[in-house]
Length: 151
Image 1 (spheres, helix red, strand yellow):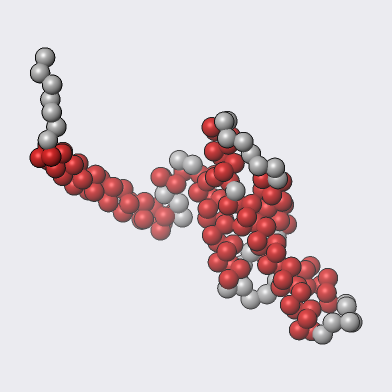
Image 2 (image 1 turned 60 degrees about the vertical axis):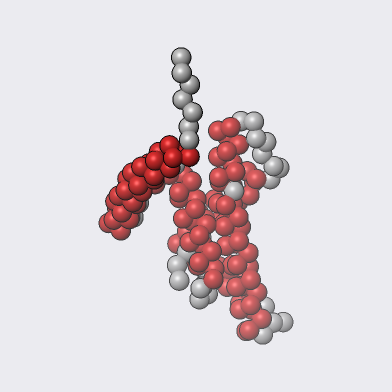
């Protein structure tokens, strides 16, 4: 039996054809996904690992909210409202600092989701201590301040 020896010309032909074919197919899928996200808010391709997709959206959205926020929730603001030893500016700074800390906890928790997913699926990867605690804490604050995540 004769062995086929691949030459540089064979490689160029093979990858040249497959490059253009994949470029066409992938571009079509990207365009379809773009319009699906525009009309529905999610694409069919996003639902493959919907939990990972939502974790990414939540963490990036909360980062953006933190960057462009205009205030903080009333319950955090009311903690410092009655303190007479602080000026109004200091009260505002403390309440915004606490709100940023909570937003950081939410972001960090949802950024850990891919690692937790890999550890759960691969089973050979060990979870670091505290990762599940951070995620549970992020869920707690997301639930508590869900209606305050607006700007």
